[in-house]
Length: 95
Image (cartoon, rainbow, N blue to C red; front, side):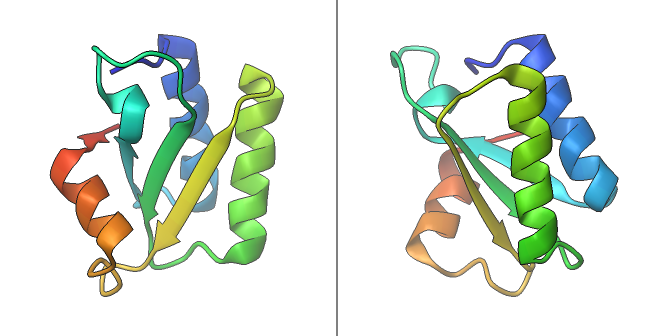
């Protein structure tokens, strides 16, 4: 996993403010220690986080860690059958 402890904590705190029960999965190149570069791709599984909360999470993370390309995908537990969610679940790392 290619996140610093500070980045990981910032993500967990920002998501936890909106839904302490949410599951966070890091996927894509940042989940692969052999890869270089890349944005931060997160799948957030939550029954409570809507669009407004998603933007607050994004703002809070970027305010804490500085500008980074950050992709957030928020899904309910019954919405994990899309290709991107399936890939994240299969290859990602829970935070």
